[in-house]
Image: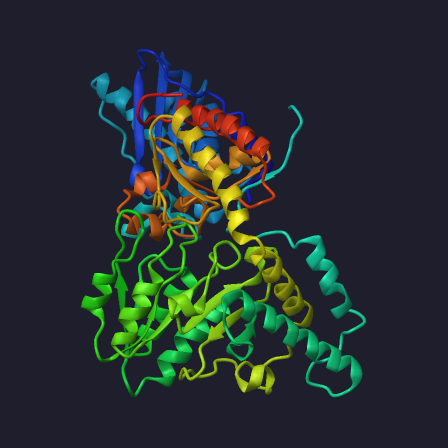
Length: 148
Length: 391
């Protein structure tokens, strides 16, 4: 049911762990729904120099965390902000429809971590697109969508 | 990677057809392919084979052969028992009782009947998954026509007090059905000592072929047909018989119930070693289901801080086939309705693992699973933001 890339990022996840004295941290998800993602960022001169994650969740959640942290490393905060859940899913060579919410969590986690950094530096937080994934044709199955 | 062995510990999902059973089936796919309803010689052989399988199934349950009706499996048997009794007795009452931890073949059938105007009570269970006979006593009324409670649960293995439940049901003039799909072939099941009126079983749960099951219907029970057509199964279940499947199920139930206590004891010993091994080597676990009133091969344990699907994927990479109650392997967002009904918090239900053993499992496999599981749980806990990274 999972693509080769998803399985690769699940079996050999990149960037697992925590960053000591991170510049931004974002935690999203809910244990009741079966997934929590915590993203840690090291930011130097507006650029993400390191990204790590800790995730409680299914194979797709772990693979999405791994891929998302790979995608944002080295990017400016503006560029990283534009990494959508779709981009994460595409980089993973697709996710089953019911697992799309895992890529949404990754996008939201990155946004939360970036805004955490901005708030720490007395910068106004950027607007988080809570329902960015609603453009998707399929119901992603996430609680955000289902509880409306 | 070191030698990858395959360890199958998901026997509650399905089992492999025993070679001896395959051998018994093959002639009925080819030489004795006749339609049991025809009158020439190869058809008579087919008819005799069906009758002989019926005798075997009846003997295994302590029933009479003419109380056994072959079906396409557990789901059809459950549908038939519940819809058939509900409709045939509708004038007498419109109330059905079942439990919250039934298989979906029962639950979804009951939900369908609710849409048709029936009323259904879903009995709660305690922390071990046991239905309280007192609850049944309080819920049953004069309009109740059927009570359906499973013999043993498929996820947590809890064995229900069906004898007591059937007796209460009968005191109120209703029929008692039990989904015994997980019990038959694994623990001794007797329709007479339990007093059940209807019982569902499925061949592929005890090394028989998929697509064949049976419904036991006690003589004199008022029940409608749900499959209409030809006069097969004494005008009760239309459709040309699944000849080879029926032969296979007959052979399988005969083999499964031979020495069932001894086999059960061997399986239980391996299962118990797994449980104590896990509890001894991995902290933050919870055994789901009843400590003693459970199927010999069933083990269901929740691991805190991790999620079941990722556990299954990692175990699979080590050649271990298992199952989970996490939502993430199903098409819904809800974790197992069975685990939630026992009061388990959703986050704990997501981290549940079910291993179901059978006689073909070995002590070496138990050792291998114990070793591998500790690695897998440790690795996922390292990755988890929850709890302390205990290994």
